[in-house]
Length: 443
Image (cartoon, rainbow, N blue to C red; front, side, top):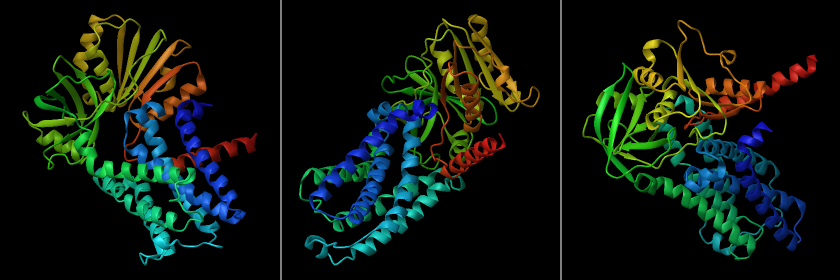
């Protein structure tokens, strides 16, 4: 039930696409009186194309998709699992494929290409790129993005193989044909959009760095004065890019940590090569291009009590909320978890806000002196809303613990990886399942 509540909206959309695809294929092949082997081969092949079409479509991060799936983190979740699912479908298609009675249409034979060899090429290239993506934690973020850009090659080759080696003419412009052509064009179009146009059309807002405040030896606050008003909700994040490629190439996500009449703020921690370059080389006067805002942790709740949990740089959405709110109409307590007190930022702002607003309080959970923040330290009840932002392992532990303790507690959180890490996810899920089996066996 928890899974369906979190991921159900996206699952319904994905299942609907696969069901419609299957219905159209079964109906069309039954009309041609083709056998069950042909049906299975065609279904597995078409499911591969559906999984890839949806994978590319979700990569565009379009607003209607984010809204439909219930947040960008849900979009990334399904993007990753559709990719790994397509890999499994490729193996199923390979082991069940039948070419009994298959005829290559003249329009494809004229090119002189071996359709079956193209299918094997697409398969091998796709497997290689997916394996590289699965091992993304080994690579730098830029390397991971280059791997993704190459995905269009096996997809394009696979489409040619599929249309050329189908038992039915997919350019006959019947219902199945129109469906397959439409999804294929959307898949290719989505990939080309990300390759050629995303960098130019997705960053409609531009600002000038007007102030840089170094909070400690690894964090800084950037004030960005915008050319035109930038509307967002406290707690949201955005993608930014610089013209100075030597400082930061590509695009990267950062939480907006506040705003005033003409400016927005980012609080950035040096977690990788690009953030280190930003910390060292960003100068006042440089221009930063900003995408539309994303994120659903906007602190909207009907509960009477708020518990906020921040891990490290995860304090930024809470800082954004405090900067944008004159008063808090409901009690809110922030648990700010850091390794040492020196790692905490905006302590003066938190202290000042606490003095001015009796509904706000906070604790800095310094793990070196106070130990790690644990579930039993939180004052939770049925009328509590919990908002969390921080490292994914920390957030996962709290989400699981809170839901186990009291399902009536409302939970909002932001904790996902933009590069993904399916190897670790698969291992974690498998390990949890094994633990459950052992527990059932022992009882």
